[in-house]
Image (cartoon, rainbow, N blue to C red; front, side):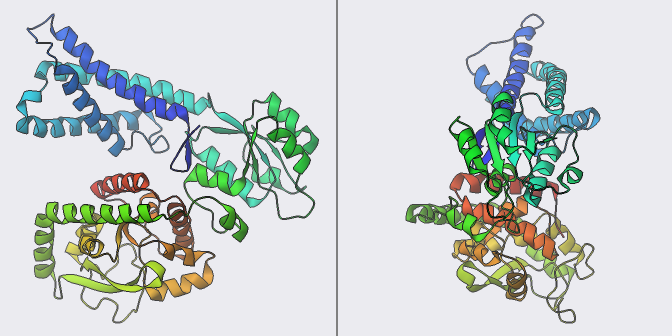
Length: 464
């Protein structure tokens, strides 16, 4: 397992992405070599750089079309359709690049031959890899000690994530309950003799034991776990393991002591300064590049319905300081005059025709780049909510006040990981992701969130 941004990623997945890049590169290289036998072709020094550019564009298009999300693309027909869509996007992007920089263009015949090779090689390569995932080859065996609700959550997450890289070898329940009924798998063995823990771990090649012991005095198998630890087996708390596995914190399952003693939440002066620099540079670039869209949207909002172009609303910021957040108005003027503060619903009648378009592609959020530039918001952080809602959520959700540690953002880990939420359950789930972000905040993490945000915006997902 490779640990990146406090999450565990199977090394085979990293290797897969690298090898697929090589497959793409070799497809163009082979096509270039074959073209020599059919037509005059100059094998110049810049060829490698040209092919490298095509490889990068190809992999970006594959990523943005979810071809690296193996939970989303599971069948051969869907994979081929998405692959063809991706290659179509590659042709369009490279066509525009070649218009501007014609000297880096690859010969047209070579390019077409390479596309044929790509379809054949990538389809075959991915079929092999999907078989490896479905069969669970090279999965890392783990043992779970305990049978709390967290145990079931971990098992469900592993079983529902095809490329998580883990397999539960055995479970040692800490009580005679209905654990067996809750576990929907014939491959998971229940072992009630805790003295067998080290033997099962060593014989099964287990490198990690996850503890999810229920809160019962005297039930923690300290001796057995120490025996395993001294054998070089990692012992990890269930909450921490789930955090690394799912990229979120289970706020309704952790206790205050876990939060107190866990790593993370480090906010050095240097990191705060660099994040502010990131916000200033990012917001300035966005406001300049997006200025035509800002002007066109302002005109469309103004002529489509009565009311101001911009919608200003009080939101809760860092340390619960209220500020005015700006958006393009996407609803009828005075939308909450009769209803009061409410979350938006799907097909909300208050949304205008123009508003429906700009909300789908998050264009209504663009004025918030000004709020970022002014220091009221950040590019990345928990989304700011209204005091009317936060007062209610603080009373009902454990650890909700902790989300105010960070400056609110235009986008965030919760926004790219979870769809729009309008219930208490949704608020809890988003808090899980927000706490993970606040705990593990880095500039690299911000960059990944921004790239995923661009992907969501392009396809208009998760909006209301």
